[in-house]
Image 1 (tube, one colour):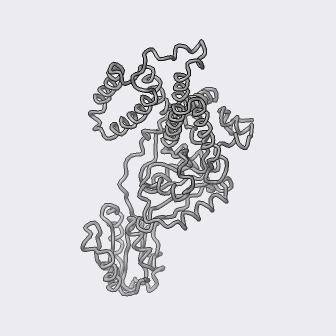
Image 2 (cartoon, rainbow, N blue to C red; image 1 turned 120 degrees about the vertical axis):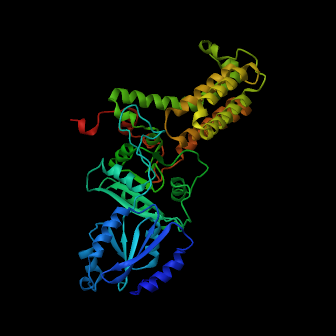
Image 3 (cartoon, rainbow, N blue to C red; image 1 turned 90 degrees about the vertical axis):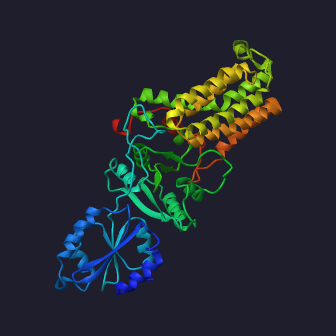
Amino acid sequence: MEFSTSISDNMNYLNNKLDVDGNFDLNYRTFYVGGKVACLYTIEGFTKNDVWQKLMEDFSSITPEDMPPDIHEFAKKYFPYTQVSLVKDEFTMIKNLLSGLSCLFIDGYDRCFVVDSRSYPARSVAEPEKDKVMRGSRDGFVETLTFNTALIRRRIRDPKMTVEIMNMGESSHTDIAICYFKGRVDDALLNKVKSKIKNVKVDALTMNQESLAECLYPHMWFNPFPKFKYSERPDTAAACILEGNIVILVDNSPSAMILPSSIFDIIEEADDYYFPPVTGTYLRLSRFLISLLTLFLTPLWLLFMQNADYIPSWLQFIKLSEEPQVPLLFQLLIFEFAIDGLKLAAINTPSMLTTPLSIIAGIVLGEYSVKSGWFNSETMLYMSFVTVANYSQSSFELGYAFKFMRMIMLILTAIFNLWGFIAGVALTVCAVIFNKTIAGKSYIYPLIPFHIKELKKRLFRGRLPHQSK
């Protein structure tokens, strides 16, 4: 429906449509502008009152003789504010209003003034808890979309840096910002992503980026290896944009979705670049090696325990010091589930009780569980290493992918012995190799297809481009 020149008709329709009497946070106020009735609609908690106080002062000085018949002329002469647009249909006006913009009607004009005088509630841009670095910037994304785009703009001051706004969700109308660098981005992938966002029908992005990710890549949901890289660091997002990646920001989410992403992209961290090349290379290779150890350590140890003759003489110390009372497979699987239980408990534990309860849990699950006969000390040692080492990389999704594949290898090894271990390794390799990025390219490039120069860049941190001769 398009608006009419009669403000009473517009108000009657909108007051009924918006249920202004039933919504306490939806405010409207009538006043006079140049002798004509005007009505202002706002959402409580979203509006900067000082902006409208200044605008009201300016409007009060307008006389009936000053009122132009054309709404565009009025906007040019008497609206001393930069972020003003004219809307002629109720759908766009209501969507803008519920997004926090202010909407002004003046009798005699068939359009609505939409004024961006929003002031979103927001927390400070502190360093994210998960993506911490030993050296580097300490700011992080927040839940407000405009703040997040500003943090990226602060780092890339180039007109080729583009931020397109779209919205998704028939009920939520969630704002989505697509950030990319013209001339470096894959245009085919960019058009594919924008087309999917525009055409996918979904009621609401209830889970923010996860809902969007499942809409963008609905295939092969059973493969646990992540298709996207997530980061709460604006410096990481800015660096990815400069490399030609697409960064997607979703309103109400404090993390950026980076695509396309291979497994090498996901394992990379900001610390690799905040230190000199030698140190950065060491950190990167250590992370790769530790990630592989978390995946293969316990299944390989279980294989050796089931086949003592496989153990070389220099590894005899890994044998069990005591005969297990509970089968090793069950010990390892119980630990896998117990660790997740402790994670969930830590999330829901009040902060003042976190330290004492952690100490109690460590004592109970450590010394007492071994003395009770439920677990062997060697099982405790290897699972403790896997648990701690799993945090050497910041991706939760990749950590759980390793966990699922590790549990499958444990079960297959326990049932089918050596052939089960080989089958588990083959299944893991296939899950990685046959996985694809959202662009349809290899998930493990530059290994497949093999590219020696790119592989060196992935494994060894070289000098930055602006430092090369």
